[in-house]
Length: 68
Image (tube, rainbow, N blue to C red):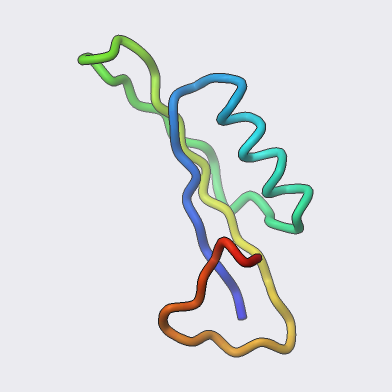
C-alpha cells in the first residue's frame, strides 16, 4: 500500500518538526513544498506532500493514516 498525506501549517518550527517526524517514520517527500500567505493572520502557510510505502498491506477505505 502507498499512503499519501499533505502536511500544512504556519511556516514555523512546529511545521518543520512535523515534516522531520514524518521523514523519521519512513515517509518521503512527494514533491516540492508549497507556500501561500494568510492575509488575515499576516503569516505564510506552507505545505509538503508526503508518501509512504507499506509493503504487504492492501489499501482499504477508511485506513487510519496516522497509524503509519
